[in-house]
Structures are given as C-alpha cells and as structure tokens.
Image (cartoon, rainbow, N blue to C red; front, side, top):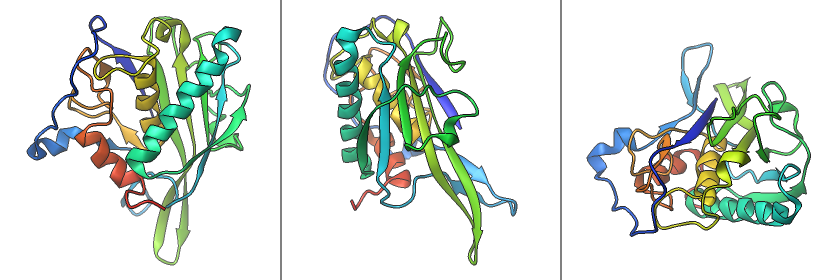
Length: 229
C-alpha cells in the first residue's frame, strides 16, 4: 500500500494548533492499511509488536550543504512518531538506495527515506506529489490462522517541490518536517484521513496541524505500541 500528500493553498504563518476533533467524527479521523487473507479476514498491516524499525536516509541528491540537515529532519520526525505511536526507531546511517516499485521488500533496512525527484523514482512526477510513503507486508499461516506483518516501508520526498516549504515545524501549515511526519505515517500503516484537521489528511493546507492530532493518534495506537515497549 502507498499514499501521497499534496499541497493546497498558499503557505500560512504559524498559528495555534487545531482543537481536537469530536469523538463522534472518528470514522473520518484515520484509516488503516489493510490486507485480506485467503479466508476473507481483513487484517491491519502493522510492524511486529515492539519490533525496532531500522531506517536509513538517502540524501545523495540534496545539495551537499543541506545533507546533514536532511538527515537531522528525518531523525527528528521519527522521534516524534515514536512518541506518538510507541514504535521504536533506530537510525542505521545513510544509503544510496532509491525506493522504486518492486524493490521495497529487498532492502535489509526496515525503512528507506529518500530526498529525491521524479528523475530517480517513478513514485514522483515533476508536478507532484510532495511525497509518497508505503509499506511492504508478508502473509503467513500458523496454527491460529493467517498473520500479516509489515517487513519494510519507504518514503520518497520530492525535493524540487518540497524545498520551497519552511524547514521548521510550524504550529500550523505546510513544512518539510510536517511532510516527513505524514509520509512516515504511511510507512507504519496509516492511510489518508478523511478529516482535514489531521496530519494524515491527503492535502497539507494552511490549517493542517504541525503535530499528530486526535485521529492520527487513534490510528497510530492501532498500528503502534501505545503502552510502550
């Protein structure tokens, strides 16, 4: 499963975080990546319980002066995701591997996050999206039936388009750190939310919160380890 994020409306200055969306709207607050087994049972696709997710970052296409910042921004986003989901992450260094259709499951590292462009991965075009993220899962059988486990994930960030966004996480509105948080949500099993007050909404707008909101957190609780490891 994979999903992308787009940008709508001009960038806005920082503002107050959005208020929590009422619980009765929960159906639109988050969506989970799922798989259907041969018996017709729907499974939520998630990383193994309390498994440390190792990741590498590809900054080879960034200007040299921006590469360290590109790594730091990703590492900060994984720290925010750990706090929100309980999923442990471990940085394994830089890589030159580029996520492309068909090669996601062959990577030794759990997630590859690449700052890239349309010339280097078919997930992107010159006009969008800003980023794409997704998961690779496997299905297996045991005495209790079928099991679905995410083994790999990926994130590609469209540098020619994203470089125009603010490099600092804002209270509200589009930024490169927010883009990374959104795509990492896809890489741990979240799909697009139907509510525009969530980070996982399909489009970043001037009122998108700079933090995982109520629906995002509810979804992350389903795919993560909310009680910690």
